[in-house]
Image 1 (tube, one colour):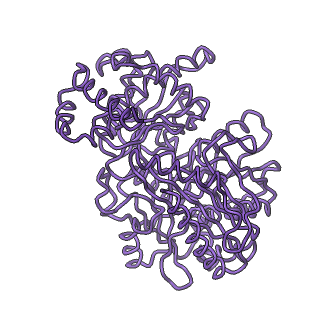
Image 2 (cartoon, helix red, strand yellow):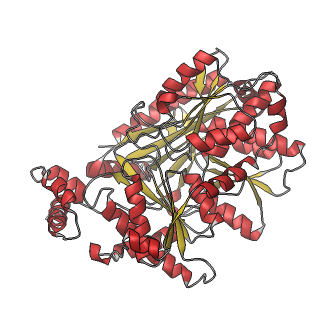
Image 3 (tube, one colour):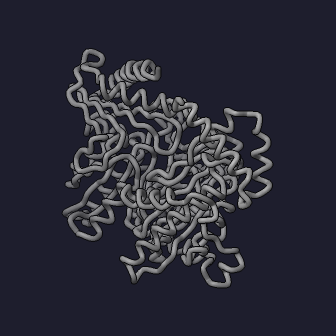
Length: 578
């Protein structure tokens, strides 16, 4: 029997098993009956279990083992519950509890409640937010409540048909690989749904194992963020206030971002009304992703009307922040994650130095695919730079390590995918604090007669022009998984010797475990002229990502080289799909 036939047989067996399982609701079975004449759909939904990766679950909502539904959420939570109970034997002083937050996506409240009731069924107290909240507030609350774990129901900036489940450890950071593997081990021990322990809502509340949280935690979280602010006096003394256009892109950021900006004195904030309220369909955008210019179309219209100084957008769970500023031509330009990170970092470090608050052993933490411009700025202010694998969980892990050992002092962390964190109140990227700092920086530079774009060009002049781009290829389903594997295998076994008449000087295969980092399927190629590129299958979406970076003195030259190099590399990627 071929592997394809084996997967097809497994899918049919799983499909029939669900139809016969008394724990599967009739509503779900009706959905399954609707696809009984579609073997391809049955195979895609049932050929495997939705994988619990190092970041948790993420998938299309629907019935099936390879879909997001209350059953996959229940199994994942049972595995997490076993992990919590196992950890309790080693940490007797820690409360047997977990915090749960959720965003504005379809079925997020239902999945959050399901997770809470499974925790309660295992004797673990679930602190469940009364309504939608941001991912970084979840990280903060885990630390504040000294909980053993946390869960966020979100699929970040994925399309509306997706939802997901992110698991957090007691430090407030996403589970690191070793801990995620323990949860995965427990999940794999679950052979049937009757092994998932679950309380009723009434029982859980009566036993005080389901506890609602909300306003009090919000206030503590906002206070933690505003304590990171550096220059409120300048903002309050400005003769002409900073004009901000803000869009929460139908997600969770609306209330906390506006409240933080208000508290530091930025009062002229214009929210994009069409995108202000939660909407699981994200009906005004193709994708609720602040990395993409299309997501800012309505915000740019609003900014043109009022001649705004800056536009800020946050993704649905408000852990990523995108900023749009006026360039030299007077048109609004979306900053890359690397550019916004460099601007925030430079503002932060310059003011900490001015105030005599720069630590002697300070560090910047960034990922291996993030621009070296941040490293140049950090070095200028006497900070060391530490590189981690892609994913803010690795930055959070280092923060916790430094907190315990005192070997270094965390100052700032960022990744090119629009994730930033200043302060140690959380262990995940936070678009609320990033929104505050970039607006605060814009206000400060405006008081000096400068735009943020002017400051970016000054940084290029001082440190060199670093330009980067991320390309991706979306390859869905089982066939897509195979194509991504083929691309990575081809690049790994037949690496190029040169590109555009420039020799490849170094090949870094992180799958072998480099620089004391965990093994991960990532390939990075360094070129003789200082350029580099990196291939990485996404851990949360059915796509392969290609990161490309160049460094030149002139911005025009850097842009030309970046475009040419991108074309050469992506042509080769497409050839290797097979």
